[in-house]
Image 1 (spheres, helix red, strand yellow):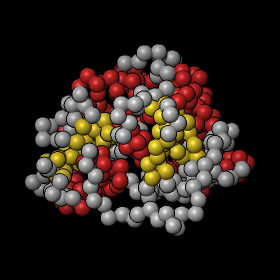
Image 2 (cartoon, protein in one colour):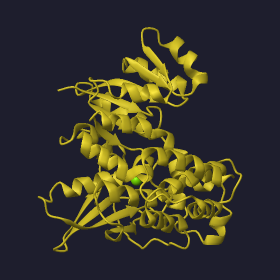
Image 3 (cartoon, helix red, strand yellow):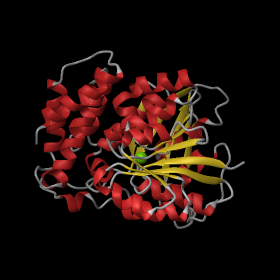
Length: 378
Ligand code: MG
């Protein structure tokens, strides 16, 4: 059976790797819709190569260029168009890989329409985890994780036969600053922060890895995806990034998922689940692997990780405020306007000043995001 997929954020890192999987398996997938924020040239190339019938460009300044380059293709503009298109009956799977809070609305629309979601956008669960999971339950939408750690946990749980998971061990590479002293990190510029040791990703998520906020986000995602309380999610630094995460059962047995750092593996699994597709990537070479090492995260050097735990404990709209403040601070850092530790300082300040809402509705989430961006003021 051929599945029709919609890719939100098709020109980003996850989007292009999703299309690599499709390219290797043209008999399994067709692309029903792609969207991008402003990378119009690549978007047009993708639309031509994969014969995509619906194309969305969010940035209004790039709309005319895309429309003129794609005669005979339905070219749409804006996020609302993406929300409409993911609901179309021919779409089976929606790959949610837009970056940032602005990527929240289309996956929500897809969940409402009962689609299967291959979820890569972290903000969806960080900002609105309980609402999103409740909506998915109600609309019978399946959420399959694309993030390597959550895909690993998901894979480890497949063999559980209904046995409860006692603990999740969420692995972290530690990022580019793992071995740096705090004094050097405090003056490190974005070029140093963008040099991730193991994974090649977009700039926002690479900075989030350098601050370890990315791991904080992943703790929050794991809390919602696997209905696991914070106390039973253990972050362990594993610099080799060979083990992508582990689950522990009540008899003490631990199941781990291993692989090369290749995002196409979790992407292909989410697209074809429960089937595993053939992929042409590099394989793990155990004889060349000298050792696998583990250490506890350093919460002093990486305060963002502790802030994420605090946000989850406080609950309500606080994780949403934390995410917005982080988004504003990372942007300022990438533009060279603030220093590294101004990122956690900004987040902490916004988390302390935002008006607390214990049980936010979706409108509250959007207003919290706006208010937290305003409070960030960098
Ligand atoms: Mg990850």
